[in-house]
Length: 369
Image: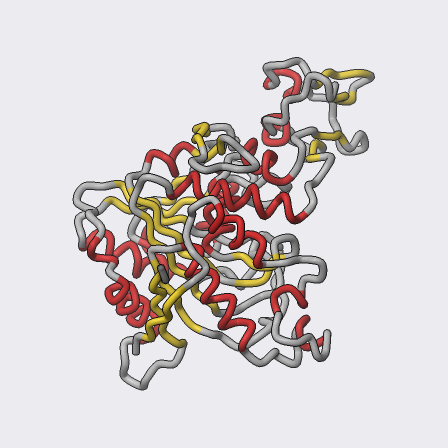
């Protein structure tokens, strides 16, 4: 059975209500008000953008969603989980400060920003994955799982590992705790850059299994004892510890899809893909390249798989921007997303998400003026 995906373009009229008004209308047409928000906690999962990146969604879009949730009696909060890599969002303090820097202040969005997996990325819930094939459980940020309703507000774009970033990636990778991200990305083991290590011993003190030790004032990891929880990454003040073995992209896509299923199963969920400033890479970069195609529009659906499929189809149907990474590649056919990030296949995450029951790739597009 086809899932309905509601779409509106980025075109606006003089003296009209602008893009935020169009977002509000497309949510209304999609049936957003049919969710019972009365006194319910609503997690609005968003990417706040890395410091230096300017392609992330403007806070105005988040405020539109927050206002609608509040009007329906809900208790909204914006959320994301800490990153596995070293950057400006690897702990809750830096993460919130980055969110503020990028405009996600309480005054602007009229709700709190809550980091889903706590101060150091260790506050998590082990969630059994119904229908999981590759994994049996997912490690999800506790605040995300404590919410009654999950809403994703996604900057739809390319991605250097997954081919695209939309609802499935925002749910799967974005809601994983640090250990959850490691479970998706790699076999869980870590390594130490000796030149960076200051020998403070914080890694050894936080590990419950005795994997790190300090030898000659440098950290050494016993891989036989390491369980891949990632806590040492979060506590290291010198950013000297990192994952040592990254998975092949196909396995990553499958795990990410199963994590997405774990987040949405058994509770109301709603998804918005905004395809504008469509950069070739993730907003986790501390920079953003030129958009690969012109702005496309806003997609909304109760089905995250259908929402991503519709957005991907529309992006692939658009003409490339000449002065972009896609334009540099010349004639690349009509699979822009895979072409701009060579070696990726954006369909894998959707095929597997459909297989585990997270949604369907078969959709009906409903255009909203």
